Amino acid sequence: MAAKSDVQLNYYSESCPRAEEIIKEQVSKLYHKHGNTAVSWIRNLFHDCMVKSCDASILLDTTEDQKSEKTSQRNFGMRNFKYIETIKEALENECPNTVSCADIVVLSARDGIVMLGGPNIEMKTGRRDSKDSYLAEVENFIPNHNDSMSLVLSRFLSVGVNTEGTVALLGAHTVGRVHCVNIVNRLYPTVDPTLDPDYANYLKTRCPSPQPDPKAVEYARNDHVTPMVWDNLYYKNILSNKGLLIVDQQLVSDPTTYQFVEKFAADNSYFNDQFAKALVILSENNPLTGDQGEIRKVCRQVNK
Image 1 (cartoon, one colour):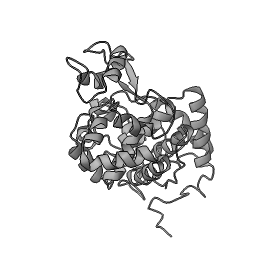
Image 2 (cartoon, helix red, strand yellow):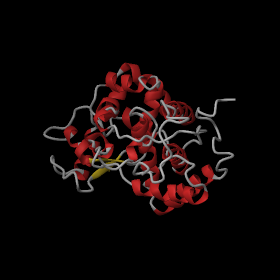
Image 3 (cartoon, one colour):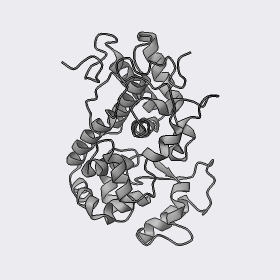
Image 4 (spheres, helix red, strand yellow):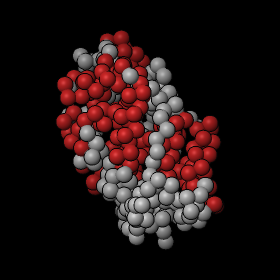
C-alpha cells in the first residue's frame, strides 16, 4: 500500500467518493456547451506539469506579490480557465476543502481526451496545490514551437518522458488550433520549403497577414481534416509535410523521432497506448503531497 502522501489510484475514495465522477460530469457538460474546453484541459496539464510540478501553479492569477504564469508568451492563447472554477465549485459543494486544483487539472485532461474520442487513461490522485507561481521558470521548462528537436527532447526527458513518449505527447496536436502568430514565420516572406505548397496556400487564406494581430482570433486547425477528433491523423499529416509548427515538421526531419512518427501513423491504438503511458509519467512529475502546498478553495488564488 502506498503511503498516504504519495499519489495513488482512487485517492479520494473515502474523503470524497464521487470526486472523479463529479469532474467527469462537469467536463461532459462543459464539452457539450463549449467543445473547445476539452482541448484546453489537455493543454493545462502540459503547461502545468512541465513547470516544476503538477501543482496547478498555472491557474494562479497575478497578485501584488507575483505575476501569473498565464502571462508568459509560452502560455499564449490558453483559455477557459474560468470553467476550471465551475468544476471546482461543484466539488466544493460536495466535499469542501478536499479535492485539489492540481488533481482537477489532471483529471479534467483525462476526461477531455475521452470526450474527443481518445483513450481512457488511469490517473493517480492526491496532489496538492502550489502557493507560488513560477513565471520566471516557464521558459526553462516549456519548449517553444520553434526550438530544436534535441532541446524539445531534453526538456521532456528532464521530466522522465523518453523520445518515443515525447513524439506520442506531441500527438496531442491532433486536436485544437494554432494562432497565426505562431505560423506566419513559415509562410512569409517566403514559404518554408518543407511545407506542402498546396497546404501553404491554404494556410495563407487562414493567415493572410505576415503580422497577425495577437488579439484577433486568427488561427488554423492543427488537423484540418478531423480537428476535434482524437486520432493519429496528425502523424499522417506531418508525413505529407502538412504540419503547422516547426516542431511538428522536425519530428519528420529528425531521424531520432521519424521512426516513431511512422509507427504512430501506421497504428492508431499503438499511438494511444504510448500517449497514455507518457501522459501518466508527465502527470506524476514531482507532485506536492502530504503537508506540502495546500488545497485551494478557489483555483485562481491561494487561500487567505
